Length: 624
Image 1 (cartoon, helix red, strand yellow):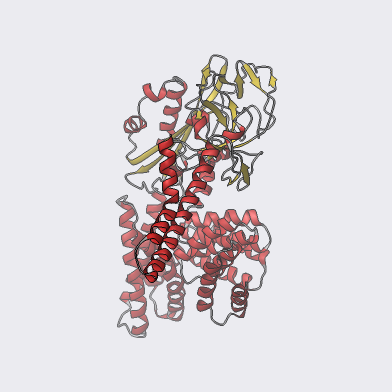
Image 2 (tube, one colour):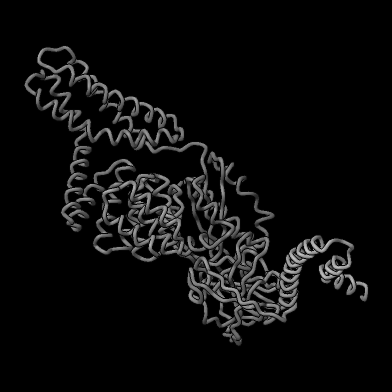
């Protein structure tokens, strides 16, 4: 021990030893002065580093031994602790080594199951206690807990690690944790018991346990989940990360039912004895590149299932991934002793082929026939007396381009091949070109009506009837624009709803939803507007204007984080969108990120140099 102390003192006193040697050295006064200055500088740096490291090491030692409490603030993400802690709320955590961990405390922890995330949960069971889940309630040592702090009573269902009606003795050094929003929480029921050493922070609650009579078995095994409603709720979550919407697949519904029945019949050992998901899928005939499933137990609504997925580090990444296209869901009743509960199986898949509907294939076939028909008529008029060849050549060129696009997309859908990025761009070009071609065709036919023979007139009338819906759509879109210019928001919404009603393609439906949402936003209908705008982005993931309006809505609600996501996506899709640069700049300023905010505002000013409003905003930003 004496030797260790001697070494430590020698290291700390090294600069003084060197300084003494410098003074004793047989050298000129000038050399001594230079050497002394060098020793002082180096020694100062050395002492500074040693001092900081010593203080830091001391703090860590005192923290780990429980002598020191370092208060840390953590911002929560998710709804798993409602109503106690809200999404986005900041909470202050104490040192668990100093204050200890008891039942009822809120704890922050990180382990191999949570990955890079820290979970915030409530301690429900302590080491060596016996825990069981019975018909929606937690029992400790055979007594049912009275939990006034949870969001909804009687819904604490088991899961893959802690099934219902199974008694577990919590190991030494571990605790059982659960979120207060039991139906949305991924906790010990899924990830297992938590090691006390993995707990980084604690909020002391000092709650005394209260118990109620153990609930008797009641019929809770029946549950119906609508695949369509679940897809709708999941697609709202997916829209936040710009993932394409999931579609319900009948084969996956059957697969989900088979999985739910298998789990219900073997709740404890289904993972080991029930066979892999891929085995079930292979037998079904569903051809796939990827499949994934989530199994959960208990009574849920479609929205509650999505909340559970959204709060799960295990499932969220897959269920929010654009790799998956198809969805299936089913339930099956399970009975275990005193417990009865439904098993829910949700399966998502990436099919090897897109499986276009006959409606989609027929739509492109019809487009092909219409464009081909018009092109044939126009070509036949070339060099005939009384017709303008220059006008005919322009129409032939435009229709030929449309024909090539329609042929490519019809072939793609008929062969059941995935659309490429180029194909999606072609669809956008096709729809944009129609806006110019249809009026030009109409004007050409009307100005030359007297020159057509009876057969040609009949063919023109037939083709015109086929595109009348397209003409009506474009007309209504024009009327929407006029009503917007007049700031008649109620009229604009009504006309946009008419426009949506006759829409056929996803792009047309996306535009209809966008205009409805834009009108609702102007009318102050924030929730409805957000829903329609998100639907627009799901139907057309490249709809930058929808993201621009979502940015404005987020700003108006002071939701800067979400607004930043929308604005960044908008700029990624369309770097020339002034609204999005302006919105992102304003958001950055609100977050205290001045340099980034000014950069975005300057981008907006470059795109719209005559805007006095943007110049004024930029001026104020620089003066902050």
